[in-house]
Amino acid sequence: MITMGKYRHLSRASTAKGHFVITATDHRTNLQEKLAESARKPLTDSEFVAFKQSILKNTVPYCSAVLADPTYVIGAGIASGHIHGQLGLLAPVEVTNYNTHPSQRGMNFIPHWSVKKLKMVGGDGVKMLLPYHPESETIQEKYAIVRQIIDDCATYDIPFYLEPIPFSLKPDVPLKNDEYLEIYLEMCRVFGEMGVDVLKLPFPVDHKQSQDEDEWVRACEAVTKACAMPWALLSAGVDYDTFLKQTKIACQAGASGVIVGRALWLEAVELQGEARETFLSTIAVERMSGLANACAEYARSWQESVQTPPAGIDWYESYQE
View 1 (cartoon, rainbow, N blue to C red):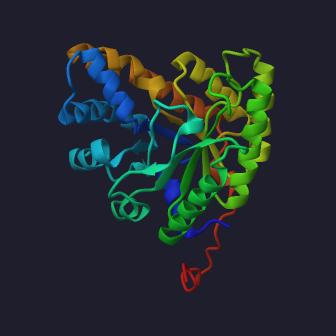
View 2: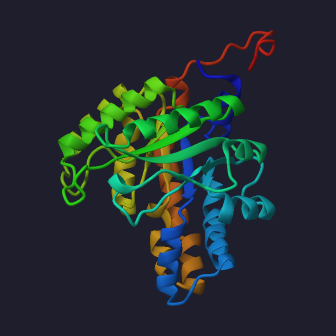
């Protein structure tokens, strides 16, 4: 049964109808490198902060929450008012190196940052990306890390949004769609049993391997059946039109919304100055609005996937004791 605190935090991070409409701005090292490459000069911290704050400024009016890193977004966002008091706030705890294959990545955490500090600053959800294969050599270590974050989130009564990403054990051989879905459903079951609160998931079919929408629907329905908790769709670097189509299918099949980054703003990375700001204030806004409308029309409320906490007049007497 979900606690009153977690229930409140999930409500703060979602729309009035219980849908997650969340902008992701927690990309770090690899995004910095892309921005510097496009500008053909080293990127300063203040320039990186400005890029992320522009994403916030333009998309927040259409969001229920933001997923933001502590270094470049949270402090500046709160101080500027872009992360205002009515907006949900999620943050990562991990450092991710996309320059190595998932099978070779270790689990590293953001220095001087913690579940406790996120809760103290008014956060509503803890996110962790986890490359996943049930037969990897480090799987038990990863399970132990997940259990530790689950325990930390229980201590501070804040939801845990886990982002498990299936990968192939052979770096040069990608997973076929049937293998991908098998691993996908296994991780849904495993992390549901462990007590993760929300799953942040890529689309369960590789669109480059299959454009069969009937297959897409069946896969998303299988995910919903396997999940003991709400799940939200991430964009995983696909283009916006593809992601909008995926969003509609996933939400009709039981997803509770989206947590979207690059599908909104990726093209802005290669633009400069006024052209970049124009893109973020027009195209990115149109995209965020379109996704918000799709979630409003099709998504399943996260409240349908959890049991409402007891709310008798004495609910607080034993709360967190």
